[in-house]
Image (cartoon, each protein chain N blue to C red):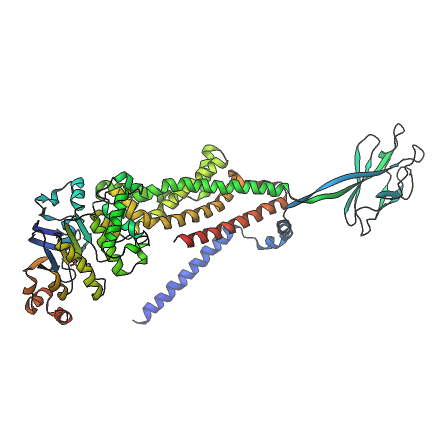
Length: 380
Length: 253
Ligand SMILES: Nc1ncnc2c1ncn2[C@@H]1O[C@H](COP(=O)(O)OP(=O)(O)O)[C@@H](O)[C@H]1O
Ligand SMILES: [Mg+2]
């Protein structure tokens, strides 16, 4: 008699464990987990990480100058160029060449350790990139070039070897990407601020209707209480992203649909939180003011409001913080702001710019988190 | 003159908190309500200003039927009745002066009060009330920065703002130590001498003997005694509080 329950217990546990394993197995297959791929595609991930670590933040304004030397093909078809004797200069090993001939090009007194693009200026005015070289510490380089048939002199005009020199002038400046990211980040922060503000204005009065200690008196009161409570609960069941999709279907993707979705979700969430704050206030002061002959509104103003304001403020700031994150995601699916910028940069393979956006998101989210915690510490 | 007739309160869960209680309180009396915890003292006091709706019975205040008053009439009646609570019932996060001013809500323009605008005259009245209970210097501190005794004085100042004709005090000193108890009850006594009727529930018999002009006792919602405080001797006490309470209470007799 004693052994039976023990045996049953063990059997039950074993069945339960088996069931859990089966369910987990199904989830594994349903998710399409592919661990080898995780390793195989590591380089792709590494590219992203590298880009993320080198965000596009600053640019230096550069002055571009071009130096060149005439280079007739074939020899004698036009006068040979004469390189200068000092300053940046291109020194081909031969002054001219037959089509197909290779020769060595030396460069001297270029900016040290920098990229130089060497190109041909064709007789017809078009350009043909020849080679990209890197200068040494003295600003010199050598490269092997071929005199292609396309360089052949036309109407007495020879081809010309050219090198572009970029010399930085002035200080560092925020790059285009950084400026764009800053602007889009503000859009996102204000989207979050706007939706949180509107949601607060609607949720605060509604929350009183959904607070049992304020509303639940009589038939009408109970009706209003259950109605507002269900409203909050039903909307809270929808994820912001799902809500954004619904609004996008209606209004098209864009910041407007994004803000509306965020607002509706925040109304429900704040409404629920607010009503719980209202339900948990000390009823003593309410009773005391009622006993003084105060009316319902006066009681709310003098006994309820002072008790709830700090908690309300703390929840509002907390939600603003959350909404900055959510509006980043909503932006990604087309809601505008930094999320949209990020998706465009990633789709355009501009990973350094995407890195700038990712850094901005990390910094802003961290900052909001920190600030909201600080402010909440102060008010409570 | 307050008249309570056949007052019965049955809570929605079926608890009979008061059963056919009748008594009268002539103007200027200091009536003390005694009884074990759970005997219905708080329920009785809250039925008088209808913070709790009586199930049956009538309550007349100067021949006006409180139990039949409309919401607006009820507010008119309530503003003449000050109430003092065991837990002080202050808004802890508000300033002392705001708590005191709130006692005047039944009199002032409701819309201005919602905006937080108070006439200078009312502010002077509030400071005078605080002066009277000896804590005018605390007017601009947060209520929860005050000690228990000081908070109860704020409670009294709030009641003073109502220029009350009647004060209901529900165990006003039960949360305070005995020395403070006297200082609080002396304010009530002073008001009583100025003609304000006081109905006060108390726990300690020495306080009952010291302050009451008349006493009623409740036991499980039934009035089991009404008379002069001197009439409550050991025998009566045993009847009211039951055998088991005797030892505990003997010290305070
Ligand atoms: N809101 C309520 N709902 C149900 N029962 C209550 C409620 N308030 C008080 N009671 C009950 O009514 C009785 C009288 O309570 P109360 O008036 O608080 O007594 P006292 O103040 O003398 O301690 C007690 O049995 C108590 O449990
Ligand atoms: Mg009580």
